[in-house]
Length: 422
Ligand SMILES: Nc1ncnc2c1ncn2[C@@H]1O[C@H](COP(=O)(O)OP(=O)(O)OP(=O)(O)O)[C@@H](O)[C@H]1O
Ligand SMILES: O=C(O)[C@@H](O)C(=O)CO
Image (tube, rainbow, N blue to C red; front, side, top):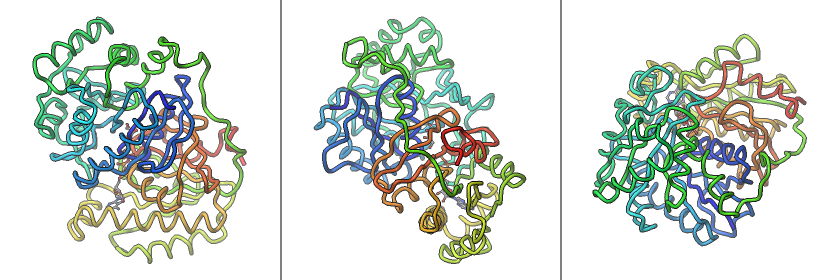
């Protein structure tokens, strides 16, 4: 029975969380979509949904179905994972999903913390920073689906819920777990449904995790999960062991990268790949037709598949994304690109690709669903927040890279790790 039941609003985020829990010594399995049958055996089960940008009702229904399956399996605490850049719109989906989970669990209160200091995301006085920039000046203000134009998370979450949102500020967090616990109790007793909790360092996140040991629901990025394995260990429920990553089957065979993220880090990684690997940049604006884009990709890939990765990207600058959206509408533009990239993924696997990196959460959701993946076993970490995984039952090595994660050489480096080198 799982100790921790997790609901992730996208697929890269689910992998990121699974990776953090594994590093903390929990065994973790990522399952795709709300489970209908028995759950796999693991200390943590992470249900990956594609609910970040789904219509609110659908996101809530899927999240509640996942929660129900996790509770039925015996999960003792529920974790709602969203993005470290708090990706959401004015209407959701973080607030409405959290509201539904608070109600289902009858807990009346949950903390909210997206910080991930290793990847530059920190929360100070309720404001989210990406590196040195406020969220709304970090490039995230241009996100194709969830443009983030306000860095004040008390305000952002406040607009998405009818519950009141308070703050546990830096000065309290600095004092450690007992002070954080007291501050959260005061906020709950004064009628707040949520507390944005500041965190600038991993030590803050671990203290927040400790303070929330008895919470039925925790919401946040993968960072705040760092403190949770110790809670279960302290109660004697989790055996003492090192990182619990699975040994994946040997990684061999043709390698490819598919990018649908338009985030700054991914655009930089594509720029690097241009000089180091065969790279095709699809011009979606010139050819807004998924079948034609896929045909173009297959023709280009002919004769290029092998141990050295090829890179196929639909990613584009904010101006070009805006132009496509003006022509097709925001959701239709995203859906077209996701459909094209998932068709290309299917075709590449049919042509022998066995090691695949996908950049972007929505993109990963589309690809993983199209490939018929049911579960992911978590393997070695490539860069913070991005592990290699093994996709079952299809038997494929997959790395689902969050849009803004990874070093500039990520697309090459992933295939040069000793575990991955063909
Ligand atoms: N050229 C383009 N024009 C318009 N939309 C695009 C284009 N290229 C990609 N997209 C869409 O942009 C969206 C990018 O979202 P995705 O979640 O994949 O990346 P991300 O948000 O950067 O990653 P993450 O969620 O992991 O942070 C997808 O829906 C994708 O289809
Ligand atoms: O938290 C993050 O930034 C990632 O795990 C993610 O959710 C990207 O989609």
